[in-house]
Length: 173
Image 1 (cartoon, one colour):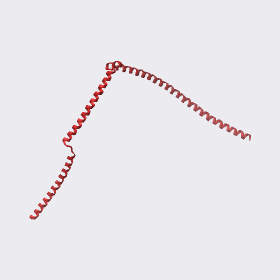
Image 2: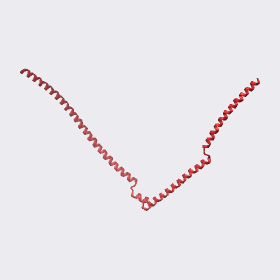
Image 3: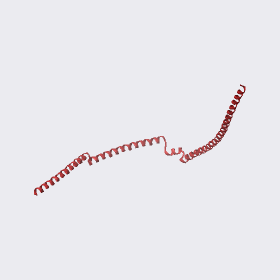
Image 4: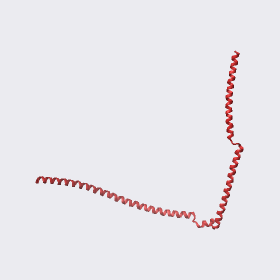
C-alpha cells in the first residue's frame, strides 16, 4: 500500500514537473521574443534625438524660407517705389466696382432685350413657315389624290380603247 502511495506521489510529481517544464519553455520563448522586439525598439534617447533633429531641420528650413520671402518682398517694394506706383494712384486710374457693375448690367440688359426681340422674330417666322408647310402638305395631298384618280381613269380608258380595237379587228377580219 505504501509503495502504491509513493508511486502515485511520484507520478504526481512527474506530472507537476512536466507542467512546470512546459510553462518554463513557454516563458523562455516569450522572453526571447521580447528580447528580439526590444532590440528593434528605439530607446527614448534615440527617439528624442531623432525628434530634435527633425524639428531643428524644419525650423532651419522655415527660417531660410522666411528670409528668402523677406528679400523678395523688399525687392517688390523697391520696384513698386521705383515705378512710382502707389495704391492711391492705382485706385484713381481704375473705375470703382459700382461703376463697373453698372456698366456690365447696362450691357447685359441691352443684350437681353435685343435677344428677346430677335427670339420673337424667329418664333413669328417659324410660325409663318409652319403655316406655309401645312398648306403645301394639303396641296400635295390634293394633287396626289387627283393624280391617282386621273391615272386610274386613264387605265380604264386604255383598257376600253384596247377592247374597242380588238372588236374592230374582229369585225373587219
